[in-house]
Length: 246
Image (cartoon, rainbow, N blue to C red; front, side):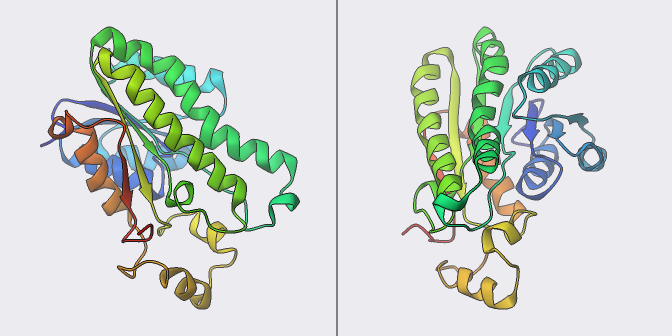
């Protein structure tokens, strides 16, 4: 019960890696807010894990504020925040990505971390403790061609994680990140361009362990970094990638 009596918000918790993290947290004793832009998906996972569902658009300041207020109303504190919600653009030459698509990728993958920090960091500082986990990507460490602006957004998140960790450590707040390789999530087809056996085989050939990341892999890694077992760990980017970045 590594998360016994802890409260946790997981954005993008209605599917994929976020759902895996929400399930893992709940199984280890946490009370979880499953926050997702898809309200029905959030409600389904929240019902499964005995948590709270919250519809949120992580790129919208008012929506993020409402999420934080709902958590405080329910619990009186926020122990753990997982910034998992993310999107990508389709594999495209960098100069051909539409401006509105670029704006949306940066808003969801980067601005969201600022917005959740603006609302939740003051509450963690006041409590003198907290753990923030950002879900980055191997794309931010070892970029793939034709995903340029997605790569850049995840590189931003990695730098933000380290900067947040340095600033917040004296306040008792730890900040780490996970860098998964692509997994069996709703974004997989977007990363591949087309989800075919041939494209999967090509992608898997770049992963030494020979398989995609799973929601369960991410849940276990998140459990460690957000639990008290990792109380001396902050500013770390943990690769959950089967050796992809070696």
